[in-house]
Image (cartoon, rainbow, N blue to C red; front, side):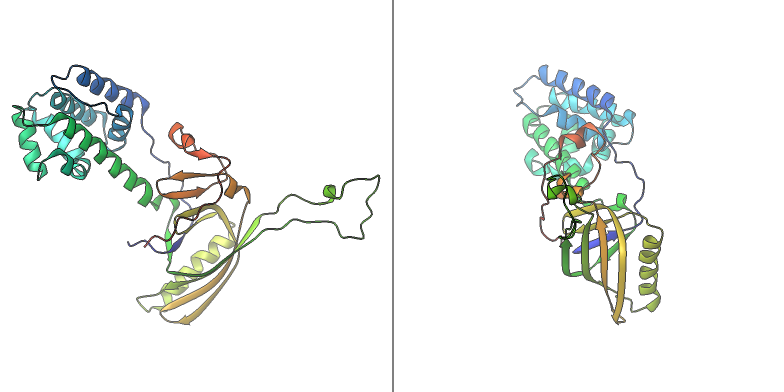
Length: 309
């Protein structure tokens, strides 16, 4: 599905973000580091931690990781990889990463690369291969991090955003309230209220079926009636923990649903944000996991990084 200007995700699904298994990462790091130390030719320094982490995230089983790491170790040491299980584990599991870094390795295709790896005999430039594989792993993982919005729930794409207004407010005492004992007037002003976001936008109805528009309306109204939190994406800014407080749909034509939605979210979701891939996540609670915490900044301000087209 092509990415639209914005989208609702409702209701949000409880889907755990995949994190690397530190035991597997340490094992891969140990094997690759040992191979680099024993290399028969000069090999540049690489970010072993990044390679190990991405290899763990992009494989399904520990069995595959062990054989793929064994193949990588043999390549680093200039040895032919004749074991079919090792070859399959490396080239089948990590084909996207190998393909993404193919240009750096000097090969025209994965088949040509696989044949060279199997034959050995100095046909592999180890430094170029490892660098290309490392860069390819990073490319694949970055693409997965920045394009997978399915964890937020069912997507309702918003094709055009006309207006996006923010309103901040506090409750203050009226001027005729008596202030006693030289108290500061600040004591009669509440903290910042929940932020109000008014969104005027359009959802296209390409199949020209009225039931399709009604189905979208029903899902949004059910979300509002049940007080279910949802996620809003505008460009690359993602707002979690949103609540609908008002929803006014208007069918301007059978092909277009215009609506005005009032949305509430806590103001701290702006100050407490962190970057994930190319997106800025506006999140109330700190992320779980060491890798996420490294990218979490309590003092971050809201960043709008443009429209995804």
